[in-house]
Length: 152
Image 1 (cartoon, rainbow, N blue to C red):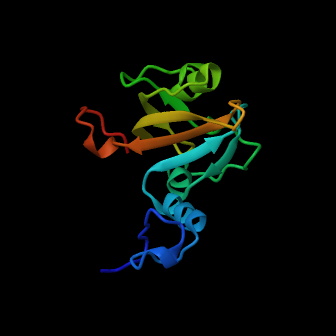
Image 2: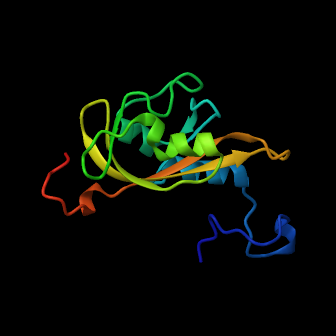
């Protein structure tokens, strides 16, 4: 059995013969970087603090960390195609109410391509319980949409 990526309950590889010594933080950051899911984080003001390759491909842009906002360069629509104001999106609601939201929506990126996505922003809190930002995981389900309009 290939042991790469295997984790045991113990952080000490000497206690478990099936465990390989890897740096967990690096391993997980690489997993997130190369996962096909769109993942990004923002601070409490909505400025992007991290994004993976799938997010950059989705946006068709490379936002400047700490400067660009999660909505920079794209337009949002309801699933019926009606314009969705940025302050009504799941991200905005999660920032405002400090709780998780889920939303299916249409996103038009900077190049004019439209995608059907499900967004799942979740607040991140420090050890004192103060919200420090959001983690958003979006899944692009455009190829599964059965609507009569072709998005891209």
